[in-house]
Image (tube, rainbow, N blue to C red; front, side, top):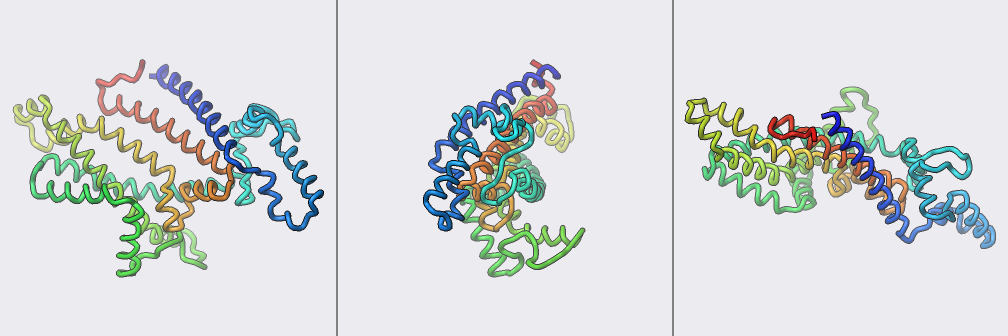
Length: 339
């Protein structure tokens, strides 16, 4: 097992560097000039010759005149900085400077990441708490009245885009019923602390959490139902029933363990995808999460911040793939992950 994990970590490092090179080169192909963007605010106060001098000095200072491989090495932290001679890049925890927020990227991301994690914790608990029991029930009572109703519901829910779901929920819960606020993460002007601040945040997050949960019910429920139907048709399940085992033992101890192997793949991949942030939902409800942050970085040509977000998604995906493979061996002892 240790040898397998070590080999996978080496693969992850190689993939991380390949993705970082690809993303850095792609972002540098975008027609944008960071030095010119920084001088945009003082452009009208400088004479043409002063502007040109400041522009050339800033390009030299930022290392934009150097070859792209040299700039990549500095950004990654594999080469020393031009001014200080010290190694300061992603590998050292320096993710660059955000030209839009006027802060270091390392100061911008943590708050947004905390908000995204908080939202996704609630979404994950609600979604798995609903889809797993519902999928199992529909599989056991296949072609029953409840199963047919759930199939219609999941098809409709799976087919509706998430932005339509968000608009419908806003109309119902915010406009008609007036139960929840539409945007923000706290009461404007409030200075709550402790438990009161947490409850206030939960109140504002209720509507986006409901939207994300509803959007995930269709696909997850159908996947759990399909996996359970396949598991219930196995010969080992017929043998267990022939031995006289109780139906609950057959379903939850035998069938569910066999169905969990394909289900765990979609559960982990789904969790990782929402962990990186939902751009549509966070933008619709004005939530300060990773999805909205990435959208703001791209819209305002803040490529240092966009690259940092992109590499964060890359690390999350690589770690998730390792967790997924290791979980196979825990769920099903027949799967060996030590080679």
